[in-house]
Length: 295
Image 1 (cartoon, rainbow, N blue to C red):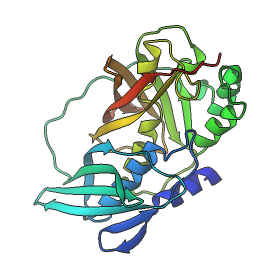
Image 2 (cartoon, one colour; image 1 turned 90 degrees about the horizontal axis):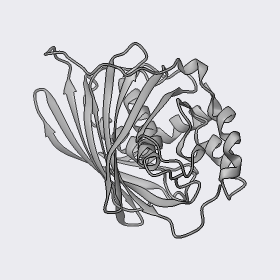
Image 3 (cartoon, helix red, strand yellow; image 1 turned 120 degrees about the vertical axis):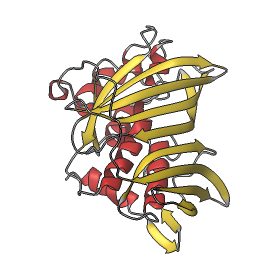
Image 4 (cartoon, rainbow, N blue to C red; image 1 turned 90 degrees about the vertical axis):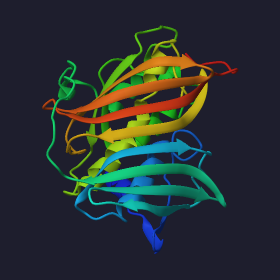
C-alpha cells in the first residue's frame, strides 16, 4: 500500500465523539478549500457506521452548501431517519465553525435477488496502456500559471491511479470537443474486504473529473488553468452491483447541458469485466473567469 493511500484511509477513519457524531480532518487540495469528494466520502463513512453490516449502500444524494476550511475539523452528525425491514435511511450534516457545509442522504439495503439488466460498457483502451498522472501531467506544465500546479495535482492523485483515455481539459485549451470524457481509476494499493470502504473510496474519486466534460464542450481548461471558476453544487450516486475500488474501474462521463452558470455531468462506472457498478450525476457552478488564462 502506498503512503498516500494509507494517509487517505486514515482520513476516512473518522473519530467517534458521541453516539451518531463523528469528527474528521482534511488534507491539502488543489484549491484552497476542502475537496468535495473527501467530505462526501467521510459523510458516507459516518452514515455507514450507524447501519447494520449486512446492509450495503445503494444510493446517496448530497448538497455542497459552503466551502470547507481545510484547517479546521469537520463534525458529522447522523440522523437515523428510518430502519425498515429491507432499507435503512440516514441523513448526515457536516458542520464547521458552527455552520453546515454539506448535507447527505444515504440509503442502505439488505441484499436480495431481482430483475437484472444493464447498459453495455462502452469501448475503451486497456488502462495499463495509458500514462499515469506522474507521466501525463508534466506534459502540460506550460498551461498553468502556477509553477507548482503540476506537483500539487500529482500529490492530489497519489492515493489513486487515475488515467485519462484522452487529453484532459487543460490539455486542449481553446479547442471545443465532444462533451465526453473517460478515465480509468483504482487505488494505489489493495484495500480491506469491506464493501463500505470500496463504496466510500469510489465516492471520493467520483468528484475528481465529473465536470470535465462540461469544460471540453467549450474548450475550457478548468480551475487549475484559471479560465473558469466553480464548485460542486450537488452530487448523486447509485450503487448497482458489487465492485472493488482497488481494481480497475472505467468512469465514462458526459455533459448533457450547461446553462445559467451551471454545468451538469452524468456518468457510468463499469468494472473491467463489463459490469455496471455505479451511476453518478453532478451539477456544479461553472463560471467564465474574468482573469487571464494560462496557455
